[in-house]
Length: 281
Length: 239
Ligand SMILES: Nc1ncnc2c1ncn2[C@@H]1O[C@H](COP(=O)(O)OP(=O)(O)OP(=O)(O)O)[C@@H](O)[C@H]1O
Ligand SMILES: [Mg+2]
Image (cartoon, rainbow over the protein chains, first blue to last red):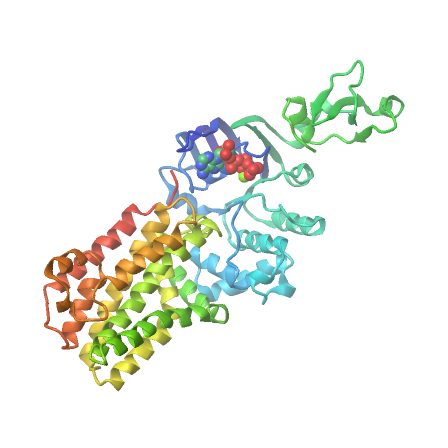
């Protein structure tokens, strides 16, 4: 159970990154979504004790992240958004060293690291130095670190950014196999939809919605999204870049749109669009 | 204290020798070339000094160049943030990397001891004292590096800091000549640099300059002070 109460963060340069964020998470997998700069990473760094909040309270399974960081670190794993594996080690050694950092001895860590590397699909290149792996394979090493550690709560900041579609599915199934509670951030709406029991939507340092994908999309039931070059008459349209977006009943859509209009199924993007957030899909 | 991390990092780290061997070479290159220059300029007279100081310089250099390495782990690899959220404390982290990096100077240290034997200045006493002084210098210089890697806001600064600190730690103290050459005032100022008391003591231990035992507490207190700075003042969790 993660409880966040009125967390605010003002960075030293005056940047007001979190403007009072509150929520509770008790579901298995939660996705945090939001535009670049929404405050996702800031929030995750605060929850995983890398960054101190300016004010507010947050706790992980009852342990306060400010007052009791050591306890929080014992039960959580956090893979930073921009972390890169050190290029001069192979993937198994990297996971092993990470497990040692978590307190396991290096002998015991070996089979655990190997199992995790297998799980993320890196077995065939396990002896290659990380520097000789592709960008996506490097990210998979970091996911393997999270998998290998038997933590209660796992924070993954954009775990699948840069992965090809197949690898992404591979990592999804690895994430689903994690025993503990997972909190991840993502820019891929289909990822949030495919993985999460709970979604938190952030915008400019605030939480604007929280709920299951079904709950969040309830108001769009029976609708599709129409993207067109012009404003559709008689409908509320939202401008994103130079595209107009409106929502039309599924049945009517075919007859209603022009040839170069695009019809798309509803996704979490649409919540942002409806709230007036400029989100390129 | 997370010994598992320290051991794991050092042992697994040492296996990256295939990639890291240039460090072994570069750790040898600087003091050996100075040894050569000093030997030529003094027509061999200062060679014992250069030998005694050379070994301590290698250790100090290893500690000081770590500022770039630690900075790179912190800023380029976000490795410090990754490790911060584990059982590993900042001092575990510092010692794991200190010992991990010492591996790359083992050949240099061995070579220096061999040279000491060739010039017949090595005894069990000088050997043990050198290791002791080396350990203090290593902790002091590595602490300074660790602290600086936390001060800077991005990694562009660390090579420059490393160069300046390298000059301060190795070139200014009397590492390659008798400390008695230095004017008293300069000596007192340079005492704040941990290599200075270490070198003065080493020259005394090897019997090539008068012994100044009072430099021993100076070195120990300095090392402790730099260590405490690293322990309490180094930025770890960001605020
Ligand atoms: N170290 C920092 N110092 C000052 N401001 C920062 C710092 N880190 C982030 N910010 C600012 O805080 C805000 C939130 O950033 P954050 O990294 O949390 O966003 P994000 O939602 O993770 O974005 P992205 O999707 O791009 O990763 C941004 O306006 C950013 O410029
Ligand atoms: Mg981010």
